[in-house]
Length: 429
Image (cartoon, rainbow, N blue to C red; front, side, top):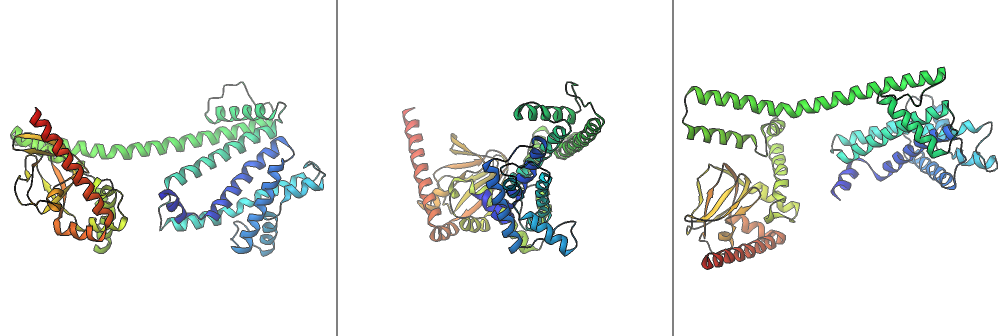
């Protein structure tokens, strides 16, 4: 549902319908040129339906047409775009699309002139809304399929098929893939000057495509390795510094551990650098939004409304602890709960270890709801980034958001049952 909402912000259902119509037309025309088959009943129905869609769009939107300047040419092209040429020609020829004027069917290809206007509208909305990656991938897949189909059918136009449709089209695709891949097994080869020229063009196109793909893959790999290389260089400089000043091993471990912790933090320096030049108000709002995703994965806030998450995010205070630091002491008065943003903590009573909690877990909420006395000790098991929420803030949020209150009650009950089981297990042991 979230994908559909994000997609609707960029592309309207009507635009998706028009894009699908253009894709069908540009996919079907090469077939007609290669096989000269009479259209089926379904193709005739689709031809009429698509013409109707374009007629509505022409009458209501009146998009600008690329490469068309004069009003007369624009009017003529719009007429051809909204006219079911294949269906009319089929019935004029008494159930056959062949004949002296059958070439006029290819005028349907003029419908692609609507694409620039559609793409421009989508691109304009993309400035304010992020275009979903799945839509980009689907668009790239459709365009790739259309290009391959066009080139394969072009081979069949030069060398008309003598086998059945499936065999002929399969051989054409096989020739196309081996030629584009610059493999060329030689079992299907051109035998005319036109065929050789067409094959050479496809080879050049294939080499260009591979060059672009390899360059893009290399760029992505370099971008991925750049951060690893930066970490490696900083780590080497740090190790050199520690060795030069003969820093004790214990302190070296703490320094290196803290370095790795900082490097692995969810919000990186690059992410903060993206928003640092914005006004303070926008920075605070973006920071709140950045916290929504990790907050929504925490059990305490799972399933609550976005409004509740925004309020929680705006009230959290970030605190930091080093390994071994005492965060909560048993029997002390508790007025704060903690959410683990990064790292882990150990829950214990004295020297008796109970459990360990990792990223996304929360603790200390028991004292905020029931007894204010802490029932366990909590110690930082590693370098930890914790988000702190005090009792008054939680009470205020629960009073306004019933879904958060339900989550808190459920978690408290589960925690009480777990502690009871652990206590019984210890007694039996």
